[in-house]
Length: 215
Image 1 (tube, rainbow, N blue to C red):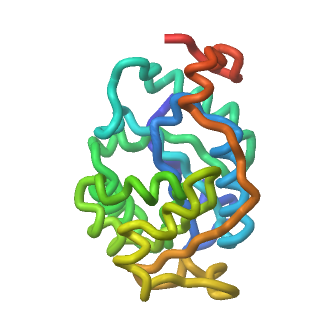
Image 2: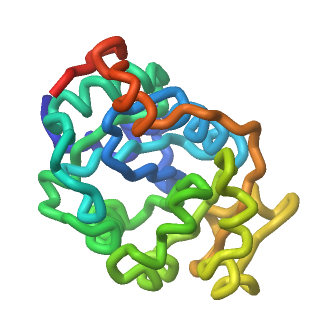
């Protein structure tokens, strides 16, 4: 399967010149219903045209041990997504990017008319200060944070929340987050989903997922 994305309007399926696309990055080792849950919520709450799952060739913060091959993770993600506006892609491989800041810079250059929103669970908001050039990420695109079990309260008291307290977009305005100039972020306390890639691997359930692989 090619790692190159179709032109943005064709992926949106709407033919719009100025689309709104959510970006959900991660190892997807494996993809699961929690990823789908957040993506569907993002499509609805942010009025997005599409969500792209950016499947990392190798997350710099995670060990390569136990990491399934990229092709297997992409196949599983595509099977789990099962939605015409959610696209599983390994575009970071063709972009030759390792860090999110670099990926965002190249995507914005390739699709200058698209309004991107970075999507993440509350657990990743806690980890964000450990990401390379994390403040550059916050200054690059708006960020939508979604509730995760056991993490939401801690995330709302964390370093990123305090650093960008004045940039939070809440209430009815959160639905237009894609149009806000960064830094801008919103927290969505959606119905919590307990699915976890780590739990699935520990339970040995990867092979049971569509397209899954035991490696």
